[in-house]
Image 1 (cartoon, rainbow, N blue to C red):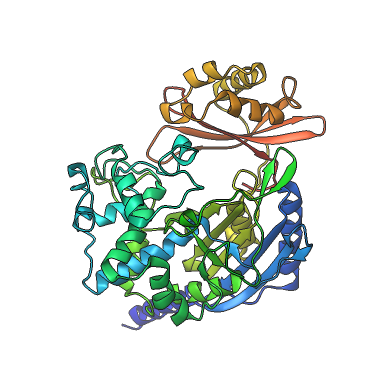
Image 2: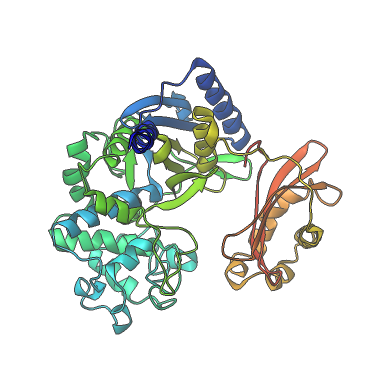
Length: 488
Protein backbone atom coordinates (compact mmCIF):
# COMPACT_ATOMS: atom_id res chain seq x y z
CA UNK A 1 0.00 0.00 0.00
CA UNK A 2 2.82 2.37 0.90
CA UNK A 3 4.59 1.62 -2.41
CA UNK A 4 1.40 2.45 -4.31
CA UNK A 5 1.12 5.72 -2.36
CA UNK A 6 4.73 6.60 -3.14
CA UNK A 7 4.18 5.94 -6.85
CA UNK A 8 0.96 7.99 -6.86
CA UNK A 9 2.68 10.87 -5.05
CA UNK A 10 5.60 10.74 -7.49
CA UNK A 11 3.20 10.93 -10.44
CA UNK A 12 1.35 13.81 -8.78
CA UNK A 13 4.58 15.73 -8.17
CA UNK A 14 5.66 15.14 -11.77
CA UNK A 15 2.29 16.35 -13.10
CA UNK A 16 2.36 19.48 -10.93
CA UNK A 17 5.96 20.15 -11.92
CA UNK A 18 5.08 19.88 -15.62
CA UNK A 19 2.39 22.50 -15.18
CA UNK A 20 4.32 24.91 -12.97
CA UNK A 21 5.27 28.34 -14.29
CA UNK A 22 8.68 28.55 -15.90
CA UNK A 23 11.34 30.26 -13.77
CA UNK A 24 12.44 33.78 -14.76
CA UNK A 25 14.91 33.97 -17.63
CA UNK A 26 18.49 34.37 -16.51
CA UNK A 27 20.69 37.26 -17.68
CA UNK A 28 22.57 34.74 -19.84
CA UNK A 29 19.35 33.56 -21.47
CA UNK A 30 18.22 37.13 -22.14
CA UNK A 31 21.60 37.94 -23.67
CA UNK A 32 21.42 34.83 -25.88
CA UNK A 33 17.92 35.76 -27.07
CA UNK A 34 19.00 39.33 -27.83
CA UNK A 35 22.04 38.10 -29.77
CA UNK A 36 20.04 35.59 -31.80
CA UNK A 37 17.22 38.03 -32.60
CA UNK A 38 19.61 40.80 -33.63
CA UNK A 39 21.70 38.50 -35.84
CA UNK A 40 18.71 36.89 -37.52
CA UNK A 41 16.98 40.25 -38.08
CA UNK A 42 20.11 41.45 -39.86
CA UNK A 43 20.25 38.21 -41.85
CA UNK A 44 16.62 38.59 -43.00
CA UNK A 45 16.73 42.41 -43.27
CA UNK A 46 13.71 42.77 -40.95
CA UNK A 47 12.98 46.41 -40.04
CA UNK A 48 11.22 45.72 -36.75
CA UNK A 49 10.24 42.84 -34.51
CA UNK A 50 8.61 42.24 -31.13
CA UNK A 51 9.06 39.19 -28.92
CA UNK A 52 6.85 37.93 -26.12
CA UNK A 53 7.77 34.97 -23.91
CA UNK A 54 5.12 33.88 -21.41
CA UNK A 55 4.62 31.18 -18.80
CA UNK A 56 1.08 30.56 -17.55
CA UNK A 57 0.25 34.19 -16.89
CA UNK A 58 3.77 35.42 -16.20
CA UNK A 59 5.52 37.50 -18.84
CA UNK A 60 9.16 36.42 -19.01
CA UNK A 61 10.05 38.79 -21.85
CA UNK A 62 8.22 41.51 -23.78
CA UNK A 63 10.62 43.45 -25.93
CA UNK A 64 10.86 45.35 -29.20
CA UNK A 65 13.76 45.31 -31.64
CA UNK A 66 14.46 47.55 -34.62
CA UNK A 67 12.04 50.04 -36.14
CA UNK A 68 8.25 50.16 -36.21
CA UNK A 69 8.45 52.95 -38.80
CA UNK A 70 11.56 53.22 -40.93
CA UNK A 71 10.75 56.62 -42.42
CA UNK A 72 10.29 58.23 -39.00
CA UNK A 73 12.87 56.11 -37.14
CA UNK A 74 10.29 55.01 -34.56
CA UNK A 75 11.56 52.05 -32.49
CA UNK A 76 9.49 48.95 -31.78
CA UNK A 77 8.35 48.66 -28.16
CA UNK A 78 6.14 46.10 -26.38
CA UNK A 79 3.10 48.32 -27.04
CA UNK A 80 3.69 48.38 -30.82
CA UNK A 81 0.76 47.00 -32.84
CA UNK A 82 1.38 44.55 -35.67
CA UNK A 83 -1.07 42.94 -38.07
CA UNK A 84 -2.20 39.43 -37.16
CA UNK A 85 -2.48 37.75 -40.52
CA UNK A 86 -3.80 34.22 -40.08
CA UNK A 87 -2.98 34.02 -36.39
CA UNK A 88 -6.30 35.84 -36.08
CA UNK A 89 -8.02 32.58 -37.06
CA UNK A 90 -7.55 31.16 -33.55
CA UNK A 91 -9.83 33.86 -32.12
CA UNK A 92 -12.47 33.00 -34.71
CA UNK A 93 -12.33 29.29 -33.84
CA UNK A 94 -12.73 30.20 -30.16
CA UNK A 95 -15.75 32.37 -31.01
CA UNK A 96 -17.36 29.54 -32.96
CA UNK A 97 -16.86 27.16 -30.03
CA UNK A 98 -18.48 29.70 -27.71
CA UNK A 99 -21.56 29.66 -29.93
CA UNK A 100 -21.48 25.86 -30.01
CA UNK A 101 -21.42 25.77 -26.19
CA UNK A 102 -24.42 28.10 -26.15
CA UNK A 103 -26.35 25.84 -28.52
CA UNK A 104 -26.50 28.46 -31.26
CA UNK A 105 -24.36 26.34 -33.59
CA UNK A 106 -23.44 22.69 -34.03
CA UNK A 107 -20.16 21.49 -35.46
CA UNK A 108 -22.19 18.99 -37.49
CA UNK A 109 -24.42 21.66 -39.06
CA UNK A 110 -24.34 21.85 -42.82
CA UNK A 111 -23.18 25.35 -43.71
CA UNK A 112 -26.13 25.59 -46.08
CA UNK A 113 -28.16 26.19 -42.92
CA UNK A 114 -26.46 29.60 -42.73
CA UNK A 115 -25.94 30.13 -46.46
CA UNK A 116 -29.28 28.95 -47.91
CA UNK A 117 -28.58 30.19 -51.44
CA UNK A 118 -25.42 28.10 -51.74
CA UNK A 119 -25.23 25.42 -54.47
CA UNK A 120 -26.23 21.84 -53.68
CA UNK A 121 -22.55 20.85 -53.64
CA UNK A 122 -22.26 22.74 -50.34
CA UNK A 123 -24.79 20.58 -48.47
CA UNK A 124 -22.22 17.99 -47.29
CA UNK A 125 -19.90 20.74 -46.00
CA UNK A 126 -20.14 20.89 -42.21
CA UNK A 127 -19.16 23.69 -39.87
CA UNK A 128 -16.24 21.60 -38.61
CA UNK A 129 -14.96 21.33 -42.20
CA UNK A 130 -14.59 25.12 -42.35
CA UNK A 131 -12.77 25.19 -39.01
CA UNK A 132 -10.33 22.45 -40.06
CA UNK A 133 -9.72 23.50 -43.70
CA UNK A 134 -11.28 20.29 -45.01
CA UNK A 135 -14.29 21.87 -46.74
CA UNK A 136 -13.08 21.51 -50.32
CA UNK A 137 -13.85 25.19 -51.00
CA UNK A 138 -11.50 26.99 -53.37
CA UNK A 139 -9.07 29.71 -52.25
CA UNK A 140 -10.55 33.13 -52.92
CA UNK A 141 -7.24 34.89 -52.30
CA UNK A 142 -5.24 33.47 -55.19
CA UNK A 143 -3.84 34.27 -58.62
CA UNK A 144 -6.02 36.22 -60.98
CA UNK A 145 -8.95 36.18 -58.56
CA UNK A 146 -7.47 39.06 -56.56
CA UNK A 147 -6.10 41.07 -59.47
CA UNK A 148 -7.76 43.75 -61.60
CA UNK A 149 -10.89 42.26 -63.13
CA UNK A 150 -10.92 39.30 -60.73
CA UNK A 151 -13.95 38.55 -58.53
CA UNK A 152 -11.99 39.42 -55.37
CA UNK A 153 -9.88 42.32 -56.64
CA UNK A 154 -8.16 43.46 -53.45
CA UNK A 155 -8.63 47.18 -54.16
CA UNK A 156 -12.40 46.98 -54.49
CA UNK A 157 -14.96 47.10 -51.68
CA UNK A 158 -17.70 44.50 -51.38
CA UNK A 159 -20.54 43.85 -48.95
CA UNK A 160 -20.67 40.59 -47.03
CA UNK A 161 -23.54 39.38 -49.20
CA UNK A 162 -21.52 40.15 -52.32
CA UNK A 163 -18.56 38.21 -50.95
CA UNK A 164 -20.81 35.24 -50.18
CA UNK A 165 -22.19 35.19 -53.72
CA UNK A 166 -18.67 35.32 -55.14
CA UNK A 167 -17.51 32.45 -52.93
CA UNK A 168 -20.60 30.43 -53.84
CA UNK A 169 -19.61 30.78 -57.50
CA UNK A 170 -16.16 29.26 -56.93
CA UNK A 171 -15.58 25.61 -57.89
CA UNK A 172 -15.44 22.90 -55.24
CA UNK A 173 -11.98 21.31 -55.26
CA UNK A 174 -12.91 17.99 -53.64
CA UNK A 175 -15.63 16.42 -51.47
CA UNK A 176 -15.54 17.77 -47.89
CA UNK A 177 -13.32 15.76 -45.59
CA UNK A 178 -11.44 13.99 -48.36
CA UNK A 179 -8.43 16.32 -48.31
CA UNK A 180 -6.83 19.01 -46.17
CA UNK A 181 -6.09 22.26 -48.00
CA UNK A 182 -5.40 25.52 -46.23
CA UNK A 183 -7.96 27.96 -47.65
CA UNK A 184 -8.58 31.46 -46.29
CA UNK A 185 -12.07 31.12 -47.77
CA UNK A 186 -13.05 28.90 -44.83
CA UNK A 187 -12.49 31.58 -42.21
CA UNK A 188 -13.83 34.35 -44.43
CA UNK A 189 -17.13 32.42 -44.36
CA UNK A 190 -16.90 31.71 -40.63
CA UNK A 191 -16.72 35.44 -39.91
CA UNK A 192 -19.82 36.10 -41.99
CA UNK A 193 -21.54 33.16 -40.30
CA UNK A 194 -20.85 34.67 -36.85
CA UNK A 195 -22.45 37.92 -38.03
CA UNK A 196 -25.52 36.10 -39.37
CA UNK A 197 -26.03 34.03 -36.23
CA UNK A 198 -25.39 36.74 -33.62
CA UNK A 199 -26.35 39.90 -35.50
CA UNK A 200 -22.94 41.29 -34.54
CA UNK A 201 -20.00 41.73 -36.94
CA UNK A 202 -17.36 39.14 -36.15
CA UNK A 203 -14.72 41.63 -34.93
CA UNK A 204 -17.24 43.28 -32.59
CA UNK A 205 -18.18 39.83 -31.29
CA UNK A 206 -14.50 39.08 -30.59
CA UNK A 207 -14.16 42.42 -28.80
CA UNK A 208 -17.22 41.80 -26.63
CA UNK A 209 -16.56 38.17 -25.79
CA UNK A 210 -12.76 37.87 -25.80
CA UNK A 211 -10.76 41.10 -25.98
CA UNK A 212 -12.63 43.22 -23.43
CA UNK A 213 -13.13 40.44 -20.84
CA UNK A 214 -9.41 39.62 -20.98
CA UNK A 215 -8.29 43.25 -20.86
CA UNK A 216 -6.77 43.09 -24.36
CA UNK A 217 -7.29 46.83 -24.71
CA UNK A 218 -5.12 47.35 -27.81
CA UNK A 219 -6.37 44.42 -29.91
CA UNK A 220 -8.87 45.43 -32.57
CA UNK A 221 -9.92 45.24 -36.21
CA UNK A 222 -7.56 46.80 -38.72
CA UNK A 223 -8.29 50.22 -40.23
CA UNK A 224 -6.24 52.46 -42.46
CA UNK A 225 -8.52 55.40 -41.68
CA UNK A 226 -8.54 55.39 -37.88
CA UNK A 227 -5.88 57.08 -35.76
CA UNK A 228 -4.36 54.14 -33.89
CA UNK A 229 -1.59 54.71 -31.33
CA UNK A 230 1.54 52.57 -31.59
CA UNK A 231 0.68 51.12 -35.01
CA UNK A 232 3.70 49.79 -36.92
CA UNK A 233 4.17 50.27 -40.65
CA UNK A 234 4.38 47.17 -42.83
CA UNK A 235 7.12 46.59 -45.40
CA UNK A 236 7.79 44.42 -48.43
CA UNK A 237 11.15 43.62 -49.99
CA UNK A 238 11.41 44.20 -53.74
CA UNK A 239 14.73 42.65 -54.71
CA UNK A 240 17.04 44.33 -52.21
CA UNK A 241 14.89 47.46 -51.81
CA UNK A 242 12.51 47.97 -48.90
CA UNK A 243 9.05 49.21 -49.92
CA UNK A 244 5.91 50.21 -48.04
CA UNK A 245 3.17 47.60 -47.83
CA UNK A 246 0.67 47.33 -50.69
CA UNK A 247 -2.73 48.94 -50.17
CA UNK A 248 -5.93 46.89 -50.09
CA UNK A 249 -9.54 47.99 -49.69
CA UNK A 250 -11.27 48.18 -46.28
CA UNK A 251 -13.19 45.01 -47.20
CA UNK A 252 -10.07 42.86 -47.20
CA UNK A 253 -8.83 44.41 -43.97
CA UNK A 254 -11.99 43.35 -42.18
CA UNK A 255 -12.50 39.67 -43.05
CA UNK A 256 -12.20 36.92 -40.46
CA UNK A 257 -9.29 35.12 -42.10
CA UNK A 258 -6.81 37.41 -40.35
CA UNK A 259 -7.29 41.19 -40.06
CA UNK A 260 -6.53 42.19 -36.47
CA UNK A 261 -4.02 44.44 -34.75
CA UNK A 262 -2.39 43.15 -31.58
CA UNK A 263 0.82 43.42 -29.56
CA UNK A 264 2.91 41.17 -27.34
CA UNK A 265 1.35 42.62 -24.17
CA UNK A 266 -2.21 41.71 -25.17
CA UNK A 267 -1.19 38.28 -26.42
CA UNK A 268 0.18 37.47 -22.96
CA UNK A 269 -3.39 37.81 -21.65
CA UNK A 270 -4.74 35.61 -24.42
CA UNK A 271 -2.14 32.94 -23.70
CA UNK A 272 -2.92 33.02 -19.97
CA UNK A 273 -6.64 32.55 -20.66
CA UNK A 274 -5.95 29.46 -22.79
CA UNK A 275 -4.61 27.67 -19.71
CA UNK A 276 -7.99 28.18 -18.02
CA UNK A 277 -11.68 27.65 -18.71
CA UNK A 278 -12.42 31.35 -18.47
CA UNK A 279 -13.49 31.57 -22.13
CA UNK A 280 -14.26 27.98 -23.07
CA UNK A 281 -14.87 24.64 -21.41
CA UNK A 282 -11.91 22.30 -21.38
CA UNK A 283 -13.75 19.95 -23.75
CA UNK A 284 -13.98 22.78 -26.29
CA UNK A 285 -10.30 23.64 -25.92
CA UNK A 286 -9.39 19.98 -26.32
CA UNK A 287 -11.48 19.83 -29.51
CA UNK A 288 -9.71 22.91 -30.91
CA UNK A 289 -6.31 21.31 -30.23
CA UNK A 290 -7.15 17.86 -31.62
CA UNK A 291 -5.94 17.00 -35.10
CA UNK A 292 -9.01 16.75 -37.32
CA UNK A 293 -9.39 13.40 -39.12
CA UNK A 294 -10.16 13.04 -42.81
CA UNK A 295 -12.93 10.81 -44.13
CA UNK A 296 -10.58 7.82 -44.14
CA UNK A 297 -10.20 8.17 -40.37
CA UNK A 298 -6.56 9.22 -40.56
CA UNK A 299 -5.35 12.57 -39.10
CA UNK A 300 -5.09 15.27 -41.73
CA UNK A 301 -1.51 15.53 -43.08
CA UNK A 302 -0.98 19.06 -41.72
CA UNK A 303 -1.88 18.02 -38.15
CA UNK A 304 -4.40 20.86 -38.06
CA UNK A 305 -7.14 21.27 -35.48
CA UNK A 306 -9.49 24.25 -35.41
CA UNK A 307 -7.33 27.31 -36.08
CA UNK A 308 -4.11 25.73 -34.76
CA UNK A 309 -1.39 23.39 -36.00
CA UNK A 310 -0.61 20.63 -33.50
CA UNK A 311 2.89 19.20 -33.64
CA UNK A 312 6.03 18.75 -31.63
CA UNK A 313 9.51 20.13 -31.17
CA UNK A 314 12.20 17.75 -29.94
CA UNK A 315 9.43 15.44 -28.75
CA UNK A 316 7.67 18.25 -26.83
CA UNK A 317 4.09 19.17 -27.75
CA UNK A 318 3.79 22.40 -29.76
CA UNK A 319 0.56 24.17 -30.68
CA UNK A 320 1.06 27.06 -33.06
CA UNK A 321 -0.09 29.21 -35.92
CA UNK A 322 1.55 31.77 -38.16
CA UNK A 323 0.23 34.68 -40.13
CA UNK A 324 1.16 37.04 -42.95
CA UNK A 325 -0.58 40.01 -44.50
CA UNK A 326 0.36 43.37 -46.02
CA UNK A 327 4.02 43.42 -45.08
CA UNK A 328 3.60 41.79 -41.66
CA UNK A 329 4.30 38.28 -40.36
CA UNK A 330 3.86 36.67 -36.97
CA UNK A 331 3.89 33.36 -35.12
CA UNK A 332 2.46 32.08 -31.85
CA UNK A 333 4.08 28.86 -30.57
CA UNK A 334 2.71 27.33 -27.35
CA UNK A 335 4.47 24.52 -25.48
CA UNK A 336 1.81 23.70 -22.87
CA UNK A 337 3.65 20.80 -21.23
CA UNK A 338 6.69 23.04 -20.77
CA UNK A 339 4.68 26.11 -19.65
CA UNK A 340 6.28 28.25 -22.35
CA UNK A 341 4.76 30.35 -25.12
CA UNK A 342 6.70 32.46 -27.62
CA UNK A 343 5.17 35.17 -29.81
CA UNK A 344 7.10 36.85 -32.62
CA UNK A 345 5.69 39.78 -34.61
CA UNK A 346 7.49 41.38 -37.57
CA UNK A 347 6.82 44.14 -40.08
CA UNK A 348 8.33 42.45 -43.13
CA UNK A 349 6.57 40.40 -45.79
CA UNK A 350 6.19 36.63 -45.73
CA UNK A 351 8.68 36.01 -48.52
CA UNK A 352 11.55 37.48 -46.52
CA UNK A 353 10.84 36.91 -42.83
CA UNK A 354 10.54 33.71 -40.82
CA UNK A 355 8.86 34.25 -37.46
CA UNK A 356 8.46 30.48 -36.83
CA UNK A 357 12.26 30.15 -36.85
CA UNK A 358 12.54 32.98 -34.31
CA UNK A 359 9.83 31.46 -32.12
CA UNK A 360 11.25 27.93 -32.13
CA UNK A 361 14.82 29.01 -31.37
CA UNK A 362 13.78 31.54 -28.72
CA UNK A 363 11.75 28.78 -27.04
CA UNK A 364 14.89 26.66 -26.94
CA UNK A 365 17.03 29.49 -25.61
CA UNK A 366 14.45 29.94 -22.85
CA UNK A 367 14.07 26.21 -22.21
CA UNK A 368 17.05 24.14 -23.39
CA UNK A 369 15.21 20.86 -24.19
CA UNK A 370 13.26 22.76 -26.86
CA UNK A 371 16.33 24.07 -28.71
CA UNK A 372 16.20 22.96 -32.38
CA UNK A 373 19.24 21.14 -33.78
CA UNK A 374 21.76 23.08 -35.79
CA UNK A 375 22.02 22.85 -39.57
CA UNK A 376 25.36 21.08 -39.89
CA UNK A 377 26.69 18.89 -42.69
CA UNK A 378 25.30 15.35 -42.74
CA UNK A 379 26.21 12.20 -44.65
CA UNK A 380 23.98 11.93 -47.71
CA UNK A 381 22.77 8.35 -48.02
CA UNK A 382 20.46 9.27 -50.92
CA UNK A 383 22.81 11.07 -53.35
CA UNK A 384 20.27 10.85 -56.17
CA UNK A 385 18.28 13.64 -54.48
CA UNK A 386 21.25 16.01 -54.68
CA UNK A 387 21.73 14.98 -58.33
CA UNK A 388 18.11 15.93 -59.04
CA UNK A 389 18.59 19.27 -57.32
CA UNK A 390 21.73 20.03 -59.34
CA UNK A 391 19.72 19.41 -62.49
CA UNK A 392 17.00 21.80 -61.28
CA UNK A 393 19.63 24.46 -60.54
CA UNK A 394 20.93 24.09 -64.11
CA UNK A 395 17.39 24.61 -65.41
CA UNK A 396 16.93 27.70 -63.23
CA UNK A 397 20.15 29.23 -64.51
CA UNK A 398 18.99 28.51 -68.07
CA UNK A 399 15.57 30.03 -67.33
CA UNK A 400 13.88 26.81 -68.45
CA UNK A 401 10.57 27.10 -66.60
CA UNK A 402 8.75 24.59 -68.84
CA UNK A 403 11.16 21.77 -67.97
CA UNK A 404 10.91 22.58 -64.27
CA UNK A 405 7.10 22.45 -64.56
CA UNK A 406 7.33 19.03 -66.19
CA UNK A 407 9.36 17.78 -63.22
CA UNK A 408 6.91 19.19 -60.63
CA UNK A 409 3.70 17.98 -59.03
CA UNK A 410 0.56 19.63 -60.46
CA UNK A 411 0.21 21.83 -57.36
CA UNK A 412 3.86 22.93 -57.50
CA UNK A 413 3.68 23.46 -61.29
CA UNK A 414 1.13 26.24 -60.80
CA UNK A 415 3.81 28.35 -59.15
CA UNK A 416 6.51 27.70 -61.75
CA UNK A 417 6.21 30.71 -64.06
CA UNK A 418 8.75 32.59 -66.18
CA UNK A 419 8.53 35.47 -63.70
CA UNK A 420 9.00 33.14 -60.75
CA UNK A 421 12.04 31.44 -62.25
CA UNK A 422 13.55 34.82 -63.12
CA UNK A 423 13.17 36.01 -59.53
CA UNK A 424 14.85 32.85 -58.22
CA UNK A 425 17.74 33.38 -60.65
CA UNK A 426 18.76 36.43 -58.59
CA UNK A 427 19.51 34.05 -55.72
CA UNK A 428 20.98 31.18 -57.73
CA UNK A 429 23.26 32.91 -60.28
CA UNK A 430 25.93 34.05 -57.74
CA UNK A 431 26.11 30.44 -56.48
CA UNK A 432 25.63 28.19 -59.49
CA UNK A 433 27.30 26.62 -61.32
CA UNK A 434 30.32 25.90 -59.20
CA UNK A 435 28.79 26.14 -55.74
CA UNK A 436 29.29 23.54 -53.03
CA UNK A 437 26.02 21.69 -52.24
CA UNK A 438 25.88 20.13 -48.77
CA UNK A 439 23.05 18.22 -47.09
CA UNK A 440 22.22 19.69 -43.66
CA UNK A 441 18.82 18.13 -42.90
CA UNK A 442 16.65 15.28 -44.14
CA UNK A 443 13.42 13.66 -43.02
CA UNK A 444 10.77 11.33 -44.35
CA UNK A 445 7.40 13.05 -43.97
CA UNK A 446 5.36 10.90 -41.51
CA UNK A 447 2.97 8.44 -43.11
CA UNK A 448 4.52 8.94 -46.52
CA UNK A 449 7.69 8.23 -48.44
CA UNK A 450 8.00 11.87 -49.50
CA UNK A 451 11.53 13.07 -48.71
CA UNK A 452 12.18 16.56 -47.36
CA UNK A 453 15.75 17.85 -47.57
CA UNK A 454 17.60 21.04 -46.74
CA UNK A 455 20.83 21.75 -48.59
CA UNK A 456 23.32 24.54 -48.02
CA UNK A 457 24.67 26.00 -51.27
CA UNK A 458 27.87 28.01 -50.86
CA UNK A 459 30.20 29.75 -53.26
CA UNK A 460 32.79 32.29 -52.13
CA UNK A 461 30.96 34.74 -49.84
CA UNK A 462 27.47 33.75 -51.00
CA UNK A 463 25.36 31.17 -49.16
CA UNK A 464 21.73 30.09 -49.29
CA UNK A 465 19.60 27.27 -47.94
CA UNK A 466 17.55 25.23 -50.40
CA UNK A 467 14.41 23.43 -49.24
CA UNK A 468 13.77 20.52 -51.57
CA UNK A 469 10.87 18.08 -51.24
CA UNK A 470 10.48 15.12 -53.60
CA UNK A 471 7.52 12.76 -53.91
CA UNK A 472 8.07 8.98 -54.10
CA UNK A 473 7.96 9.17 -57.91
CA UNK A 474 10.63 11.88 -57.98
CA UNK A 475 8.41 14.91 -58.61
CA UNK A 476 9.23 18.28 -57.05
CA UNK A 477 6.68 18.97 -54.32
CA UNK A 478 8.44 22.03 -52.94
CA UNK A 479 11.48 24.11 -53.82
CA UNK A 480 12.38 27.12 -51.74
CA UNK A 481 15.37 29.36 -51.06
CA UNK A 482 16.08 31.06 -47.74
CA UNK A 483 19.02 32.94 -46.24
CA UNK A 484 21.48 30.73 -44.42
CA UNK A 485 20.92 30.21 -40.69
CA UNK A 486 22.32 28.28 -37.76
CA UNK A 487 19.27 26.33 -36.60
CA UNK A 488 16.65 24.15 -38.28
